[in-house]
Length: 602
Image: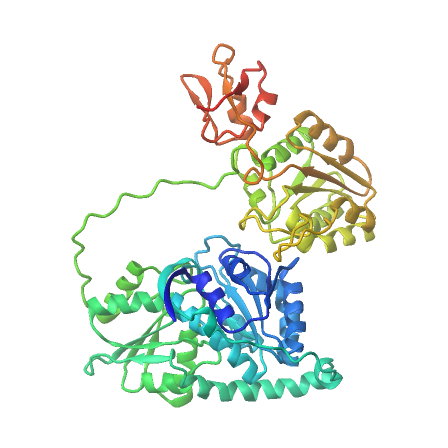
């Protein structure tokens, strides 16, 4: 064993490798992405790793691996769990053979997500046990324990870190490579009575699952991370907490008074006996947690079940915010108020506020050119531009203002169809990225062709999964195993589905891009424009441009029209920042006096 300084996600990955994982698959999504990438960097020859086309497929691949007796890890963020829920709900009824851990990274805030949904609540809904780590060390240890737990009780198991656990760094104790477990699968054994789900099997399994989870509540009451931190015997107030909030509570406790603390590491099944022990002798309990009031509701239930006269406070009573992240300071304030003690004075000066940095498409991003081409082509028309999840969601920002709706991955296709069915005079567009096209857009295209919809699909193909860190996908011709494979052609897929009008164009060739959109938008039925240009983070810079101040008339068209962060105004003239400019040339194509010219970098 040795000590390593690791990000929480790296610790989770190393824990899976130490547990003898055989297969890791998933779909990228912040804050979970680094788990699979770390496995790929450190795996041995016996570990298979892949970015699946979406989370549902990943869950099914992992299920097959488990049926064959292997250990499998599936990675995703909380939004991805929605996509994976269909096979997961059924898999809980079927059960597993090899250990199967579902890593779901939740995102309180939310920092980079559409929702603040809580996987602890999903665990209760799906009846799947959940481990909730508070630190990187605990995440590492819990990963190994979750595999053993999964195999012992024949159930998939959630490991649910949140953003601050996933992305925080710590020095943790990890096993040496020679200490790793070796897990050799015994192969799939044909047994239709076990592996083929039917209503009768589901009925019997449901009863067994309920009985198992009731028994697990007692088992988990003895699980070491579910523990009580003793406090001042005279204090009749306690705090119940879990996840990253536990670290904030323990820090506040050192300064504000050592009341009793219950740490809940397995929110479902809830460690009921441990909770009863904690509640004994208390008058009030403050529940400190993020997202849903999971611990709070469980303690209220336990008080009613056992006739305990303890007042439970938390989110439902307004003592803890209902949404957003907890912080060290917010928890300290809540604990001080609960214990009725003053907060210690802060001696050091408060740091200055951070500058506001709104998200923006990168300088040279081809998506900017794509949106602008469509905007120019449709100027004066009654339109709707249905967006999607990814870098290109930033097309909503001014001055582009090209995202009218954004719901979830792939939803823009269905939304465009629905609006067009009701408003026949509106020209409808649906934008989707190349990775998302494979992940979730295909059913929408099939639905549109089959139901004779009328809209234009715009595929923004920048040859990567850019928003989450440039992971490969079926259109890139690379896999996470390092193989070079045949690219899946978006054009061929669309034509195979039945989209007969498909045009591919470079969005950085502005005139041709506008012409392509105008030429296809009024055609009947479903048609597609593929804007293909690599992400600027992958392609080499084409140099940079500079402004000929003698030619520049200060019209600000380059500023007003495209909003590139490399462009600004100084002394009434346009200025190009050479540190940001990539030489894409879009501004030069728009300038009415041709004031932009190629310049060498300093």
